Length: 193
Image (cartoon, rainbow, N blue to C red; front, side):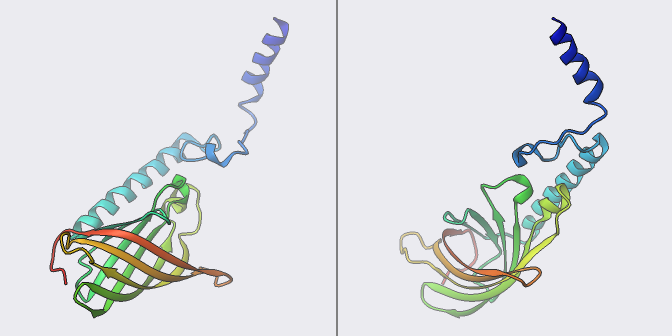
């Protein structure tokens, strides 16, 4: 009983004067014990504002194509990819909240065939959520894109197979890597080749 009272006294007395941080990054996030309530609410506000702006941006771009790249866990929402110039917004899936990255990309179609379009483009890898939640840098890196969207199925002309090569360089220019994307997409509207 004395030990129980001593433990209770220690927790109630000293836990308020010291900040204990968890070594596990999974337990950190919006409601981190190191932040005051005001900071937590402020971060939630910015997170919700980002989400609302993201939804409005997608609505205003008249999204006409959705693709998923399963090997890279990327969701892509694009304007009409059969036009000469189009935008592609990629969102990293299956990741911790603070590690979610968004990649807005400007694409230009170079050539069209009977059932495919070839394109190039480039953009930036943005860590918007990480910048809001954990005060990380906003721009993680830059990349180029060279790809093809093929519509091989005569019965399902709106289904596409996407393949893309994408060199990526970190923001500081010190390192980079070569990415490859393989995915499937669906073209909602507009004219298909």
